[in-house]
Length: 330
Length: 66
Image (tube, each protein chain N blue to C red):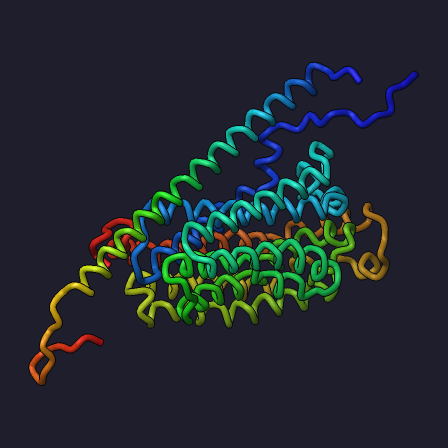
């Protein structure tokens, strides 16, 4: 008689680490550290390190919940089909339980370690990303990434709140930079992965409104993002280094966004877009525009560098006075 | 159900990492408790010192407490 009971999982610890979306986590850590360093006030370096760990694990937990909920969808997309749940290495319920436990631990520990306002913001971020974005927004509106982008913008505010116990307008300015950065960044990627999203039934902007409209919206968001990103340089948040980086970096961002707008990146044969069609046609269309998609890839890659440089400049300018380096300076 | 060698090895590794994770969490809670206690003791000592200090004369030439 054949044994029909489910087999025991062969998932490795590395699979569970992948559930935390380590690459996203590194950006979360970086922006949260910046918020924590820029915030005025004193924080014991060990407390600060534990706070950053909590924010990172909380963000990772949201990623695990997302992968648990999106396993079937991820399996349909080339970019995500190797993820642990999509590939069948980790059970969906195991991923959800793992995400829930880590969420609880990280929020509790951040509350005990710093303050409950910061912990509340972390809890809000997890619920916003895993519940609001993944379950509700993602499949319902092409504005999914615009509204859902707020989840990725919270870490510097949480870092700031961990130090001061509140979130003044300067913290929300950092939030706004990431919030406005997310649509051009994500849509640039979506322009050359539209086939993937269409196959999975996700109404990303290029799928729902077409490549031309997406390219225009990327340019418009970039035109708003760049001046906003300069603002910390003219306030007490940043100094000359930040101002230089945001000006030069911003101009380059605009140039790449303009080139993308003028390009034909993401354009597909009309016949292919009009039907909800089989994967094969859409995939072929995606490969057809590969050469034209170069401007989209350039903007996508540069957008990551741009955000990193902005926050690095803020970090470098504020680090010498930070309590993390010099507890008596603040 | 007889488990394969691969399943047993994977379970052993996962259990080891769960144990390490729990120990790390316990250490972090202990550290947090210790740091908060230390901070609270230091804060209450400072508050007591302020309360026990003789009152500063206030006048046109002196800085009053805000």
